[in-house]
Every structure is written in structure tokens, then in C-alpha cells.
Amino acid sequence: MVDIAGIKMKNPVMVASGTFGYGEEYSELIDLNKLGAIVTKSITLNPRPGNPPPRICETPAGMLNSIGLQNDGLKVFIEKQLPFLSKFDVPVIVNVAGETIDEYVEVSRTLSREPMVKGIELNISCPNVKKGGMAFGIDPKATKELIEEVRASTKLPLIAKLSPNVTDITVIAKAAVSAGADALSLINTVLGMAIDIKTKKPKLATVTGGLSGPAIKPIAIRMVWQVAQVVKVPIIGIGGIMNAEDAYEFLLAGASAVQIGTANFVDVETPIKIIEGLNKYMAT
Image 1: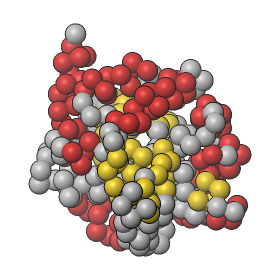
Image 2: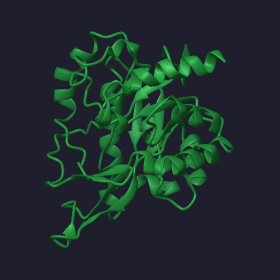
Image 3: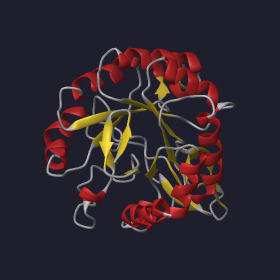
């Protein structure tokens, strides 16, 4: 049994936001009940169409994406996705995104009334429209202000998902914890870009996107280790985990649990294989 800020899990292996839909897409392929937790794709107050295509491309040892938080909005999530997830014996953590603090607060407060929701993961890498497009997660003051407001709106365990696109991630981590975050998940994707040499144009319509996969694992492990030195809350490691050995590295670096992301696109059984592999490591 693993306890992340009060969220009781069978094991330390979760599936990462944006790589597992709402669980329904994978439910016919793997046993969701075996997972430590499901982290849903980002939910916003209102529906979002996402960015125009092309918005995903492969890169050496990874992939770039610029989906743009496409989702049907909070109302549809509560009416359609949560009832499906309630069929399974697995904690549901909802990843929450927004353009303003008020949006984060409203979504978090509303989700707090849903018994199926066991925790909230704040995606603090979204553009803060009221502050000139700056992402909440790269400014310690903005991070602190956002988390304080959300903390006041919910009693659910609050997990802050940190962006790696900063000079010193420990500064952001300490700001998040001081504001009331019960746990931290890191890292989110690394800002990257790819160009098609035949068309001489960027491969993504938005030009830049988020890099994930094995290419970012050393960065993620380093950041988990750095943050583990300065905070005392549980850390959830994310970034390029493809097998049990990768997951174990994160645990050794100071993580209490891990999330599997890009690997879900390579092999849908990866989370289950990692759970089985970690059991062997823990037994030795």
C-alpha cells in the first residue's frame, strides 16, 4: 500500500495526464484495477478544441506534442467520464487546468463535491492570460498565489505538477509547498521544436511543443533529486519511464511514486509490466 498525501494506492504506479484519456480508452486492453491511480487528462472549466494540427510528431528518443489541452469541459467530465471511472477500484486524480486563478478554483471546488475524485493535480504550466501569457509554473509568486487560492477551495489532496522550463525548479517547488501543495509531480514536458527539412517548416502548427519520452529522463531524475533535497512532501516522478528499471531510478532519486506517460503509446501494458517489475525489486 502506498499513501500519497492521503491517497491510498495499491502500488506506486500511476498513468500520467494526457496519455491515458479518461481510462475508458484503455479499459478493454488492460485491467485498470491493477493501477496505483489514474490521472485524467486535463480538465478545464469550459470545452477546449485544442491546437490546430499537426500537433504531434516523433523525435529521437521521444515525441513532441502541442495538443492544447483539448477536452470537453468540466460539465461533460462529471456527467460522462466520472460515472465510467466509478466502475473501477482505483483512485482517480483529476488534472485541472485553467487560464485564470478563478477558473482553477471553480473547477477544483466543483470536483471536490464528487466522491469518486480522490485528489487534484494542478497543471500549473498553462498560460496565465491575465499576466501577459506567462505560465503560472515558471513564476514562484504566481505559483504561490494560484495554489493558495485553490487550497482554500478544496480539502482534497492537492498535487502541483511542476514545469521543467525554469532556471531553478527548487524555487518553484518550495513556493508550491509553502502555499499548501500536499505533493508534487515532476516533470511536465520540456519545451522543444522540430523542423521538417523537406518543407523547411516546423513539424508542429504551433512551432514549439512539449518534449516527452526517454530523451527527458535524465533531466527529470535530476530535478526529482534536487526537489527531494528541499521539500518534505511526497514527490511523484515523471519523464521517460519505459520500464521497471526506469521507475526504480526515480524512487532511488527521492520519488514516492511514478507516472507513466509516453510509454503508454508504445505499449499499453507498460504500467502493468512496471508494477510487476517493481514488485521484484522491492522483494530484493
